[in-house]
Amino acid sequence: MTTTLITGIGELALPSPSFLSTGAGASTGAGSDGSRFTGTRPTVELRRDAAIVVEDGLVAWVGDASSAPAADERVDVEGRAVIPGFVDSHSHLVFAGDRADEFEARMAGRRYEAGGIRRTVSATRQATDEQLRTGVQHHVRQMHAQGTTTVEIKSGYGLTVNDERRSLAIAREFTDETTYLGAHVVPAEYTDRRDDYVTLVAGEMLERAAPHARWIDVFIEDGAFTVDEARHILTAGIRKGLGARVHAGQLGLSDGVRLAVELGAASVDHCTFLSDADIEALTASADEGASTSEAATTGEGTGSNAPTVATLLPGAEFSTRQPYPNARRLIDAGVTVALASDCNPGSSYTSSLAFCMAVAVRDMGMTPAEALWASTSGGAAALRRTDVGHLSVGARADLVVLDAPSFLHLAYRPGVPLVSRVIGGAKSVAN
Ligand code: NIG
Ligand code: FE
Image 1 (cartoon, helix red, strand yellow):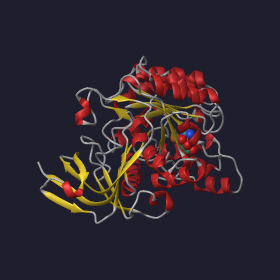
Image 2 (tube, rainbow, N blue to C red):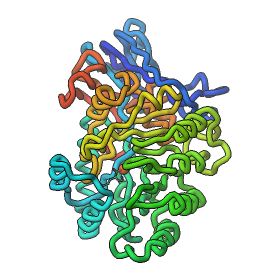
Image 3 (cartoon, rainbow, N blue to C red):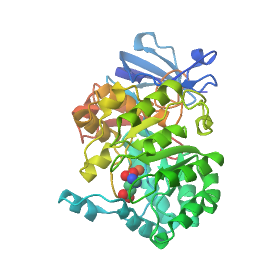
Image 4 (tube, rainbow, N blue to C red):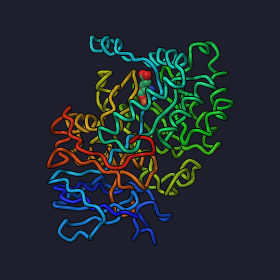
């Protein structure tokens, strides 16, 4: 097996993992059976003049360059900063067409409405598999070039049994983190029969989607689905072995946040509008975990004490002129926070986690270190993954070399292409 020494790292940013290794796992690091997710504080350790040894795609050693062990190959990054690859835990990449005209209208004062989703549904249904595949590949490559090495991809622009199934099958070609979002909106042909659509989503559509999905998601919002509909759909998905995640609090206050915690969802996404009770529920999930729910047992290294992560999506607020979520309030309350792109053609057509970090630091009350943590370890927590989002020994060696002396430049120099090199990445992300 070849070992590679990556040396000359001017600043190595090491986000604290979002889980604690216990028992035998403590010495070997990530992914051990003893790992337990916790509501850990988001910290980033910075090491100067560091080196990493990579063996078989995993981190085998981390330390001072001066005491690095010998390796078969050597890569000198000449004083650049290195961070773990970004974990983008929320994207909608299976779509056709774009909605630039809606963006233009919003910038002129028009409100964002969930109904625009139906335009993309119509374009997506008309696209061939090959067109959809080419689109996903294009976006995934762009993400990888910007430092994203793990990505979650949702369906949700098909909204027929076959279009949801094929959307997930195509997404699966690029990532294992696929999410069934048949409950994105009620499609036009079901406007007068929404109960029938909810039955379809929780029945035949779920049956066909589940073999290609790890997660199930529902968009809870006026114009999309109610909390009761979401409970029905998510419960059916959990019974099928899928993990739960939820869109809630994007356009207004919603009981969806508490539903997510109650069902042991891995993440509740948007969280732009939150009541004190919502924050208390999210904090309690970090303190106590969702140990009794079925969803909490889905995936690697999970089990008890897995919090429901609040995933913030600043690209959506940027593109819809909504107020930004208050990350400071969440972090101070002890909630585990992730940042993700929400990349989609309607509300957030960015695939840049660096951009999200810059907005989070500038306008959401996060420190640069918290923003880096949320884009790496936080994203991993939102996907209940122990093998990515950090660089402890045993983790996947997904590394981003920055054309900068410090990770701070990601927020300090917004819009500048600072990724010099990406090492590693999910199965087809790097192809
Ligand atoms: O997360 N909120 C629901 N879904 C997407 C928007 C999709 C669209 O507008 O096409 C989101 O923002
Ligand atoms: Fe979304």
